[in-house]
Image (tube, rainbow over all chains, first blue to last red; front, side):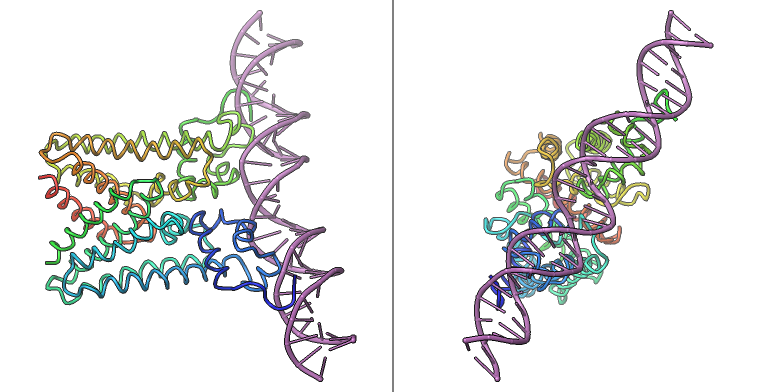
Length: 193
Length: 193
DNA sequence: CCCGTGTTGGATCGATCGGTACAGTAATCT
DNA sequence: AGATTACTGTACCGATCGATCCAACACGGG
């Protein structure tokens, strides 16, 4: 029952992340988080300190894990915007189709609740979205197009990416979402080619 | 203080709608709704019955008001998919730029919290999104393209539409959002032309 | 072997949640 | 004017929120 730590912190963060992801910050009660992680109140506060501290850890875990996947996609097809965008969106499509993980997107979920988040978490979410836009934008540099066109294109890709997550919450079929991604990839290819 | 009804029901629904819109269902406490509408608990429950009954009224008001705007946009340019989509998305852009109304979109907000909504409201939200997809789809009929292409196109337009709302919550500048809409309109024009 | 370090689960805190009950009051009808 | 009706504000309900506290406990070092 006690003694040395009886749970893996990373595993607990992963499980908590999925609760935040599915339910959002406010609706992720400590009871829900506790039963998802298997932790009692003592272990919980001993390991994480507070609900929003844990939430920030979950945001980091999310952006680290999926950020790496997006990064790989973005660097796989340098100079080929259409393929690049396709690979980028495919990361999201794969996640949506993964039954081991909630529908939607933790960032989109958090954006919806942005005004009600604790200030630290609010800033954190904003930074993650900006960082994603910047990474996409960086993947487009080198293409011969005006700078503001690349900005618009990056925002477009991030926008479509978020939209896939939103629609997946309403059980829009994967086939349709794949078509949306394909259309967006063609658009990006034309816009920057 | 009492006697005959001392408030306008429509006005109260409008104000409550904005609270749900900004904060989502769970975070829209009765106190928040009460102070936004100026209603005490007695009047509140006398007029609406329950929180989720009011929420459904707000969903209806939202979809009626903006649904009419979308409808007008969709029927303004028959046979011209690019203009049609542009007009459709412009409804959302106008709403986003309107300081009298919260950022984002009540439907997107509700989708994020879908699993936690009362069952009746959950079904209602789903229907509204499906209805929108159907209306867009209907606006595309008559174009010479295969049926499933029109389906994909409709989903694409609805997706981009939702993405504008999501990004507006993160204070992405209107200029960028307008570019996203323009790109999407061109895509739709090519895809169905 | 047994003490001390540190984790554990549950009891409990004040605040707030959605919802109810009810006394008080203003407007309408006879 | 008096009775009736209908709406309002507030006090209050049990449940649940995030957070704190603490007694009970298991393990590692002396």
